[in-house]
Image 1 (cartoon, each protein chain N blue to C red):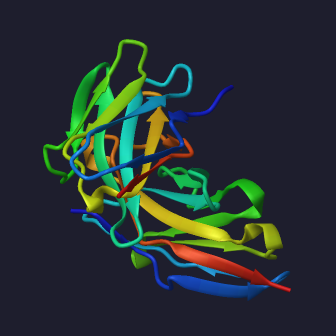
Image 2: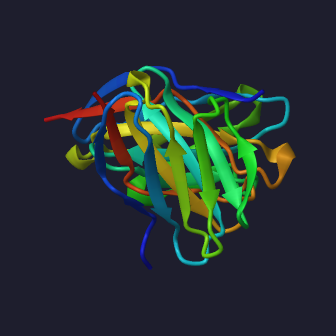
Length: 116
Length: 114
């Protein structure tokens, strides 16, 4: 069974500082990986996805993530935080081996706080 | 292009009642998935429908059911509501439900059980 671990339930950064949100997966076959963001009282918005093309993936709002198979990681980064980045971020995996099964397994989320 | 639409946005019910939630996927998307989000359990997969057939099911009791219509719209039903069913219920759609396709989420229905 697949699982995903997000280290740090809360991360606080200053505006303009680097954002680093950690995600590690556990799967015998490297899964497809996704990062989503959730703002208060809203659903999930896709930031980026890894589906076995380039290992460095660029997403929306200046975010990017790098797939590292040797570390089973897919950490999310942004060079310079903005106040509008304050939200909850979820890493998710889907099972590559099933092909047509559309089921996401989510991490527990990381709440990003951006301070002045 | 309109996104995923969920109705209603908010619902208040009492224990023992039943509830139906609705989801309209993005036009052209044929796969619809449902998730439950709670502070304690996080985001959990309920089930997925494609071409009116349930293809995948999470670990929830039989009180949770769903269906999909020929126009890909989906409904989920929860019977004999319990306090623990209070949650944000999220619907997501994708083109065909392949595991490498991103799912697009609606804003959810917040269900409160009194």
